[in-house]
Image 1 (cartoon, rainbow, N blue to C red):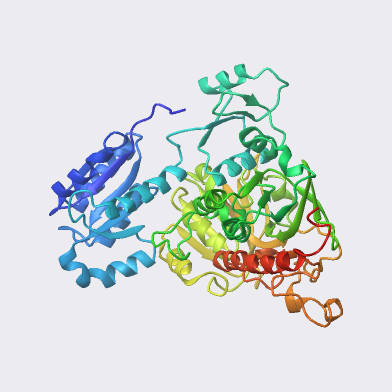
Image 2 (cartoon, one colour; image 1 turned 30 degrees about the vertical axis):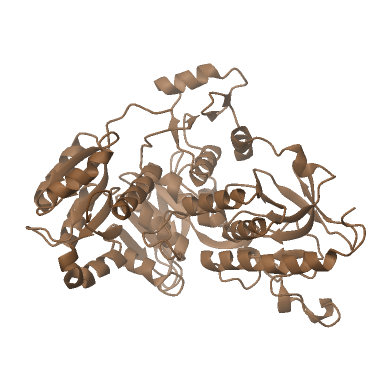
Length: 565
């Protein structure tokens, strides 16, 4: 379903190559208005006009040398007017080396999104690849999506509504939320003939439901797990529980090597990584990639090799097998039998120990949903709690919408827990303030969040801050309640593997392999594993590496009688 909206704008800024750029961007005129400017001041005037008329600038493309301003200064001015626009700097071949150092520093600090050479002829697809990546990123995060596959109708925000929005964002499904009093809202309400309740959710195929959980929406969109998964005649080679980066990597490599692979994810594909608005330090993506898109590409890649995915299915118990009996995973939709199990359930963000704030979850307090909730931050002040990479990514993304973002962190700064490139972007962003040695201890409002209280850990001085959104991104708690006691855990309830396993649990004096638990055929990868580095690249590496251990296990078991009967 496509809504009738004003076309978003692509704004081209070039004194010397304006005609060249205008010609190259002719392919976009069906879906975008393309405007040109020759100076920084003219471009700023265009941006102000577009915003004043209620329009949106999707992309700013500027040559690296402007006649009336330094390009980095110009970008600051433009982004103050249209902060959600993506910015692409196109360099001249002849001046590339001379200007590269200054421009590189700006790119590292997040002054713009991508840096490429000017088009070098007709159909310069490398140039247009950068353009379409940025337009795709903009289209998935703008305040008003251009297309909608799902409509949500609710009189006010709630924890359930926010969770559904978060799920749809993380699955890459465009959607919009309407009040029941709008014309679209009335239409959706009229189409529903069941019991009253909010929210109502209308799918692209026009069915409408009143979900009581995110799982209801997942099942309506993707269907229930089909009978082959729970068919007792089928034994999978490997069952992967959790579809974050580690589980997705395991799925790709296991399926690509011919193993019958099934993946179960209770929530949205991507895990915690799926909520990251932009990951810039993942190998092979120089312009960055959102966690949602990275996860979706990995899922499609695994499916390309035959992996089977079930979204919205919850594993409730693992019954470990014996030498002649496979492992059994009890789920909300039946049992799954498998020779090997990969535990990749990761961890979930800790909740604040502040009852008044938890009572406002979904009404200004959002746990791990900066991408979807950013739309509600337009023109407001919001607070991000935490000092890790997820907190930094959330703050940078929120700063495109909110008037101001405050990061509170208990440590003396961000450097100990946040990647250097993110620290640089945070420090260079005028819309972001960091409050070190600080914690949030109270908050409230009339029906939704309106203020929080920040306490200085050293002096105990408290400051009340006006605040319309709070995003706690505080450490993590492992998801392992479904595991049997034979799978050993450390004191923080992360899974022990390899030499972490106590010596008395070793078999014949030999420790389990690095990613193996004491239970034969059961492995753990990613954030759920004790001692893991809590980085996407590391989790992906473990997911790939575990497949070799699975092959070894299956080879040892291949000659055992009974298992294949």
